Length: 191
Image (cartoon, rainbow, N blue to C red):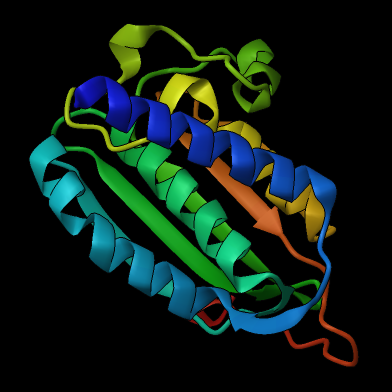
């Protein structure tokens, strides 16, 4: 049963990766804050099991694209931030708008990542050391989670950045293009 479940997860992940790489057929409005709020609520049990605190800072972030793929992007980032963290760590999820477009940032307090390894994180079937993965981590199998994030971001015309903190941890930012006719700057804390 466990092997079948892993196979199903792998097939679903590969289909999502292919769908993201194919591009979008239609664009619908979606609020990244609402999507992130739903994902955080769904992942609270995983965070509790890993002894990781979820810290939302969610301001409206109105994007245009595929809401299902946007939810998968947020879920993969949150899953990754929980899985590659440390007991007692934090996962901060921030949404808002800046430079006229909506953005999402997910930060964790995990281990140190050498800056020269950041690009590798977004390649399919690549993982850093298995020791970095929390035992209760929900993530996508075989190192596909961040490859899927990259494909979904590209399909939405979004810019993806990864920043390693010198003392450990990772921030991944996804800056979406401004929806047509909207250029509002609003971030949590008045930023």
